[in-house]
Image (cartoon, rainbow, N blue to C red; front, side):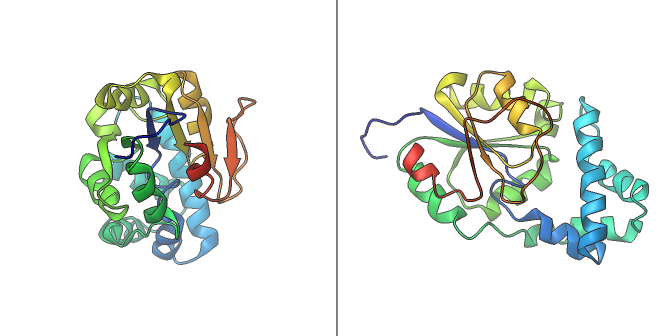
Length: 208
């Protein structure tokens, strides 16, 4: 790790949206962008509402049913999970940041799928926290606090890189500054604003 004065002691990432293009896999499994978006929105609604952990794969299936998407699409999505691709700059940015500070991820995933997804973003992580391992889904505070504990850093000194809109108030709620990687031009869920917003991860190299 380089010896330098960093603005933060660690950086933590949302995994499925901030680092990986999970949208494409959902859309392909659904058979169209329109159905994939409808299914994904319902899934996000169910996970945000769940609070205490229920099996991730069950929520994915429930979201498909409520979005009028075939159950077979859910099975296909899980089978294709190892095909998740990082955004074009993800690996470059992670490699450079890992030379400066410890990195972590916190994801609304089962332990098995979370580890598979994290591996698609390389091996730069000092901590990987899943909703299953903590027992709660984001944006509850427990997952964010768990990754802070694993890294041994203070909230105010740990930058959270959000992908989903709900991660902004979730991470801010435990005292973490937030960079919103809003690549999909999502709408905010409330009036709580991130400290930084960009459609790419590259500005992190100037911020951290």
